[in-house]
Image 1 (spheres, rainbow, N blue to C red):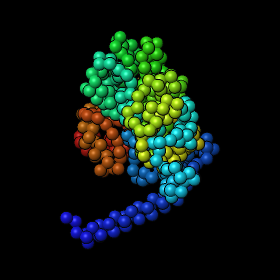
Image 2: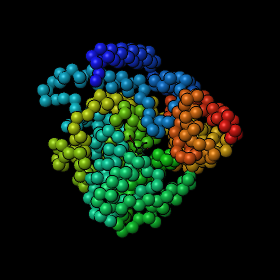
Image 3: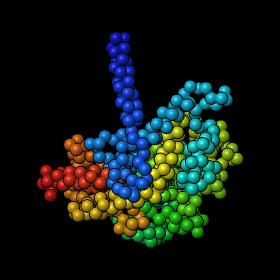
Image 4: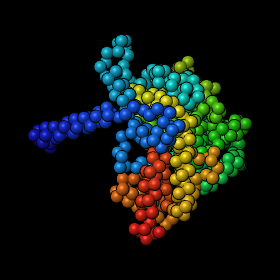
Length: 429
Ligand SMILES: Cc1ncc(COP(=O)(O)O)c(C=O)c1O
């Protein structure tokens, strides 16, 4: 049993640690410089992005090449979260029935900027907590009979694939997969693979807009059109897309779209959304149910009836959209492409086999390379423990390098230098 003195001294230590953290975090937020002016970008591109780097809490001596798993929320986003707490935690809302609890209301002040950002109306979008949640809504919510098929790729994330696997095991639907080439050479390759795998039982095409495995940007518009011509629903897992490249779900023409803006939009962790095309909303059942689940008048809002959750995260999400708009998505996307292309070229010079598409339209800010015989986990640990460089990979020899806009060229160069050093040390050079 915990004795009282130990408990109290433990509590005091935790409290002191919290104060220190609070002090240092607030100090960091306060000392962060203003956002750089766009005129600097025209004069000196590197200087502009170096200024932007200062908006991120990632220490100067750390290199973060794994934005693909989760982004780092910059100062304006963290400030907005704090503002959200300050505004809501006093419990002094004008209306005595109004509480900051997310899952019982429309929250259009947050849905509107998000809907504008991704190209739809707020009635077609539900604020959720991540792509896994949104994908689960899709897989659980459509009427399908045993034997009906969903067709996906072999590069889906577990948070995209497993909701369907669960339904297959429990209710007898069938999951089919096309195998994507490594690398995918062009859009036609992907379209032919899907077209050839569609059967009379196919009910849904489900695919990542950008896959977690290779970072390939799949031809989502063409795949959605293919599905439409065959009377099949299209559901796109766009976890990586908002904030990495321009997105317009209406223009894509898909029926459903899920995402995790805590990746490339740098929104707070626990930011997700589900888009459902207006004509499809009434065909999707809720997975989580509370009051409103059956109210078709509220359109996609019924999918965000998830019970109590963290409203200040929505303040952060709105700030992350504002930041991306302030920088300009075209500037962000072009920066992403430049950094990724540079990284890919340098890795190829080092003999890496590229699993990144040679077609510029099918790649953006994720580079994947295969580097046998380097054991990726050993390299990952070695880079982090010795040099504070974070990368991600997959067994046995694949590396995935994410190049967010705040990454500096000198940081990529440092990674490359240490990659070479690893090979020398392990006698693989
Ligand atoms: C394509 C894809 N879908 C879904 C997910 C799961 O995202 P989350 O953990 O935010 O739900 C990821 C995460 O890496 C992903 O890459």
